[in-house]
Length: 194
Length: 194
DNA sequence: GTTGTGAGTGACCGTACACTCACTCATTGG
DNA sequence: CCAATGAGTGAGTGTACGGTCACTCACAAC
Figure 1 (cartoon, rainbow over the protein chains, first blue to last red):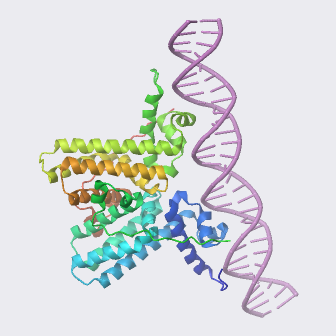
Figure 2 (figure 1 turned 135 degrees about the vertical axis):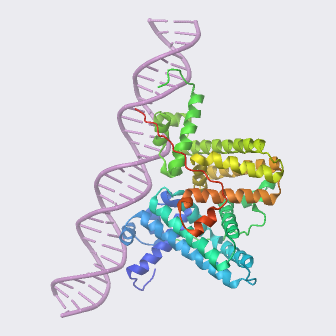
Figure 3 (figure 1 turned 180 degrees about the vertical axis):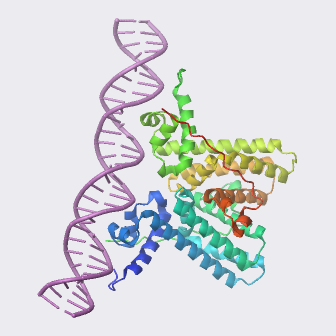
């Protein structure tokens, strides 16, 4: 596809991006490395030259997700009209909701949580939650309680999206979903590779 | 081991219990059916006589989890000293925290969420969240907002336990965990089979 | 031109797992 | 005694996947 040659570091970036998409789709165990390779338009063997193990690849992808999320919170905070703690936190939430519209970042977190029996993954997730929480806290200056609530509703949002509760037409579902910023699933056009 | 003969329906019950333990440990894809069989002290082949597919087995286990959770909420509500909506909801939360002390019920939910790309599992999870939400709502009589918060903090609790955040000794972690009822991990004694 | 190097791959290996099948054994009923 | 039925299993089968290895190819340096 690209006529310009890529150094292996560039390729690594490509693979990380592809890994996020692939792992988000079917989770750590459910995604063969070959699926990541295919998504990156690269051979499976080469993926293993760029990353020593599948675990390492997943961790790299997860870490990248967290970076993207923190960057998004930064943008949200910067764009907040109301620069009070609450205003900033709200703006962050709104920006976050927009980021996860395509679900990949969200599903990566869910899948990571489920893969926590693997030490390096749990550690990466811990660190990630740490980054996010610390940033939300220090940047907004909000109370611990407010930050805790911020995170809690974020988790609820994950559940809603994963289980597809926003498509459920029942009072209990409406109540659960109410007031939570909602991404309408962006249509992802899968590119056909030869 | 048992000298009394068991009808196949009894066996099915045993297998469901075993499945909860096994699946909770390593998730849907990470748990071979043979692990469930071993936990139930039964041959793998017989598991497939009792449940048509691994999917069906997982769904049965998940459904059982939800039943156990709702029963727990019932007990919590009944035991509430303060029978106001908030009092009942709090009591439910406390009882729930106690139930998930051994983590199996909690991990099953996490793993189910991650396995939501399988239709029957997502459906079962949806129904389960529905049961729980509806029960919490009607039994407590609390507002939609309060029920929503109840669920949100429940989800945060799942994250804390899964990622082991309660073992993290940093301010951000303390802030996240603060005030959330906590199970100290019950020691499970694995029984040795011959 | 030949020697070195890094990008990239096809073909393979060992293992694990979902699911099947032919079978054994015990109990029941006549 | 024999037939039928249901509990329960050992030994497979086909396939998929993580990881490896020997290899090719393009290009640069001399």
